[in-house]
Length: 219
Image (tube, rainbow, N blue to C red; front, side, top):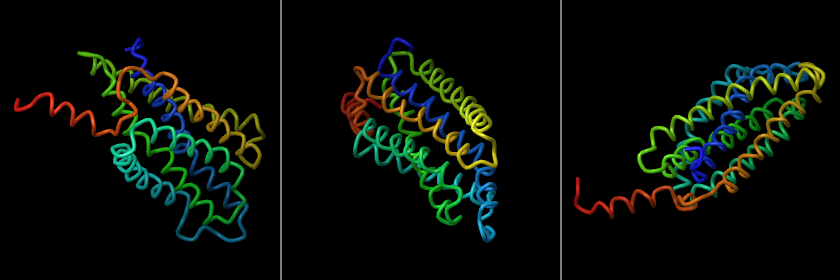
């Protein structure tokens, strides 16, 4: 699996996706709670926990939507576009807790879409790129990378937050989320740099159509 450049491009990018996703999920409530201390009015019904719940629900639709988009535009195009957007949001949102709270919530939901939209797409790419007889092993490495990144993302964000001045400092939050953006920029690099023989640039449904054609009438 490690020698399969095509698969490893998706796997490394998936590890970065896990880093971004769980950094956001783990720190979102604390970030929004800090924002409320800077607001002239309260949150109303959009409390930090409600926003976190909405974010989780939006993430489900974003993952499905990203897969559908990849079926039309190609896997790598969607991966690069969503990861670049996600990184841009990470560089922006940490410095924005003092903007009107409703506007911040909108940014959070946009960030959620950008982070989550490539999740299923990366897994499809890894499966399609797996070597003959190595699909299970490929998915095992894929999951290890994803949850390894998920374990590191919240930890590193917290370390940067502490070193930057702590949870009551806007600049510290900006640097903390910017650290996630730096990691996020490595995703497109991995996806494009480790490309190989598999059709990662094709629409996601094309390999299924090819395989059906190759099987012919065999059930």
